[in-house]
Amino acid sequence: MGREMILVLDFGGQYNQLIARRVRECNVYCEVHPYTMSLEEIRAMEPKGIIFTGGPNSVYEEGAPSYERGIYDLGIPILGICYGSQLMAASLGGLVTAAPVSEYGKTEVKVDTSSKLFEGVYENTVCWMSHTDYIARVPEGFLVTARTKVCPAAAMACPERRLYAVQFHPEVMHTVQGKLMLSNFVLKICGCRGDWKMGSFVEESVRTLREKIGDGKVLCALSGGVDSSVAAVLLSKAVGRQLTCVFVDHGLLRKNEGDEVEAVFGPEGPYDLNFIRVNAAERFYARLAGVTEPERKRKIIGEEFIRVFEEEAKKIGAVDFLVQGTIYPDVIESGLGKSAVIKSHHNVGGLPDTVDFREIVEPLRMLFKDEVRDAGRELGIPEYLVSRQPFPGPGLGIRIIGEVTPEKVRIVQDADYIFREEVAKAGVDRNLAQYFAALSNMRSVGVMGDGRTYDYAVVLRAVTTSDFMTAESAPIPWDVMTRITNRIVNEVKGVNRVLYDYTGKPPATIELE
Image 1 (cartoon, helix red, strand yellow):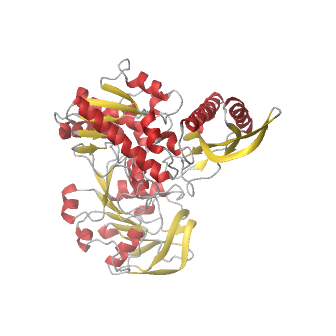
Image 2: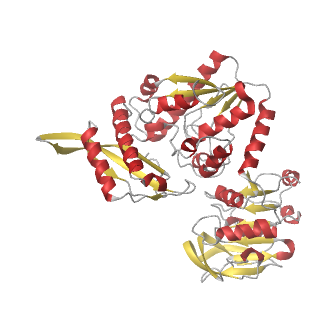
Image 3: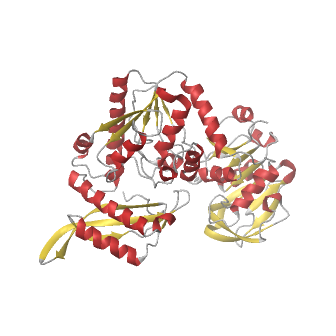
């Protein structure tokens, strides 16, 4: 039996990859493709089902994203979400207009539980709404299967043609029974077996990489973080000694991290791969001198990374492929496709226009962080590496507000080390997705002993999240925070104040800059 898959057609919303994530949680393989994909390409993929995503447009505006009507005649089940539901309605003869009352946030929805999509769902359930348009009239042959106080068609269905649509977002956690709804669509309406596992992804990725790379030489950008580590081991399994991992110590790593990475992936480590460490701190500091704007720092660090890789590639001979541990939150936040740019990641939007490699390979590009960790476990990577908290490619360069200097790097390294040590000692780290110290650009007056100080304020941040697309600030116990604060102001030279960032994502990003 061949692999079953659900195709997600992307119409430009911020949470589109969450749909793929939820589908995979049903143990069904899923891919996201732009809505510009042709009907012939869709037929060739033979998807078991199609999902239209949300998007920022109004279907009745000139030039709004659309799709040819032939897609509804393929006999493939289709689920439209938010904009996707309005597109389905408008394409098939319904009416979509500006809503008299917009709906945002958690909303009580009354559903028809006799609809296959809502089997097992409470008749009155809470869903996440985000729309200013609505379906004023459903197309002929469709039934209204859900409504709210102000939305007459919160969902519609044409069971005979296996066409379904919901105005809300079942993919986000705020829709209480959203996972069940998507499971109903994938397993009951599309008839998928639900037998795809992360092991399947690893096996297929290894096979695909072998075919793609052939006898070519591969250079892997290894930072020692979870993403690049999993990418490195995946490539090592696929092509062995054709792979050279280059670890660039840009002087912006956490305390002692450079030596820790070398201990794991270097000659004395457990992995059969070529390892090169490049100590390039002075080079990066020189490029960053006087630069204060966050996006410029990201771009500079990203470009310098690539230039170092190019230089190392020339030393070892012709290299065909550059491997990076890019994951989907990196991609969507960098504004690729139709989504808005939030920030550039050094291994996505931060790439220079010209790169001296035949091709860049990103085997984890379609995965979320927890899926990357699962892939690492399938590859046999030790748990302490797999469960390591994320660390951005630009490193401490984006945890220092304003200009980056060696002195500021020392301050944030020492403060971060104390923060992580005390959090782990207290056992609080088990509930945290990411936690770190950053350095503000604020200096203030303090008193230490009998003297006046004028030093920096360190900012501590800790968050909980399942997918890194949204996050909530974590409540660190007060006694733990007191110990951390006392240690930082007493042990880290140049700091006289410690602050804690309670802001969630959104409106903030997880990183401070």
